[in-house]
Figure 1 (cartoon, rainbow, N blue to C red):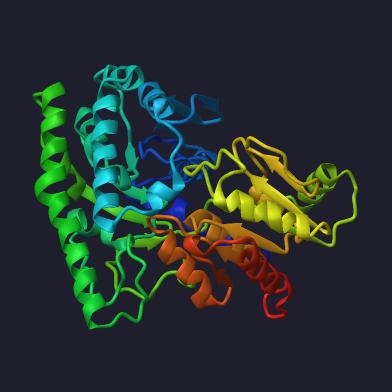
Figure 2 (cartoon, rainbow, N blue to C red; figure 1 turned 30 degrees about the vertical axis):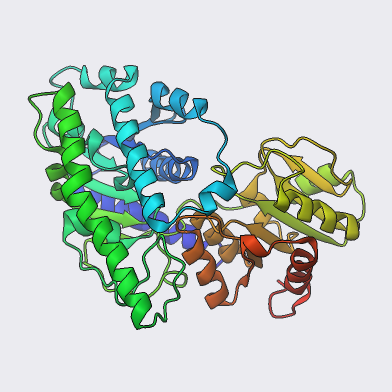
Length: 438
């Protein structure tokens, strides 16, 4: 049964895609995948789905923010202007982000959506795509709806091929405004809140207000603004927000064991975990041995806070706690994914801006995973049975870490409570608790 999840998900994805485009026989189709969410994790998920479809023999054009180039049956078209703008931003202050209220966080995401829309519509690759010959045909468009409807004007440009929505998010509520999916704010905590699934009356009222305002803001404020922006550049185009309603099927990155029970329409299909590739345990073990230079470590802890949050200095409170704990535990090997760090770390702490996470988690050598609670990382660690210490920072991370605890797959530590003593206590409990040892 090993790796059966990825195999099942692959089959589901291919069947859904082929059904939507009414495939007969073994014909190869042209598919346009729009992945314009300003998040590396969303792109990585979209890239994996694109590869699955390309391996089935179809030609995929992946319009995205992060990658250019070609692979077999897969053409990456990069929106360079968006990437350049994002690169100009100062590194995200994780504490500043942590202090934002749900309303402020939602507003910041919506502002980013509008900015990306402006930049994408004027980017060279988008203009090039719009200039394709009139007779050129895409048989299917796949769109990450977490980016908003801006680039759906490509649907009208290419004569309204079938549309599939697919997102690295697992939030069913995200389909409400174009599918009419029912929402249950009295039952399901909003993705941006830190509410328990067993909400009290006041919490349910608060959750309803947050969810209602988010929905109304999308319908009456953001979508009309996006429609107007598109019309400013392409006056003859229809309302792009209305094009979302042409969606045939939605693929959500949701796994039943992690997500709360929630009624959904039959056209919403869970394909959670499709980004999890078959691990290469030998390579993962060899990688760890190469890092440690064959030194003898009794335990190994992997630390990663994803791609959006950067810790730049050893003066950072979390960095200070981790370094202090590492000094107290010389027999424990710490792998710390971090872009750069000014300062000296202990010899048992190995820093890199990238680790082969899938291979490492699947190597059987990781005793604990310290994570921010990003959905993709949580799904990977849960699949490989690696105990997690979740330290949520913003967005959906609070709900993801709550799911870890509810599943019994790990523990939670609030960012405000991080200190060398508390961090060490939680870490040692995680490593030595027999129920969690894998």
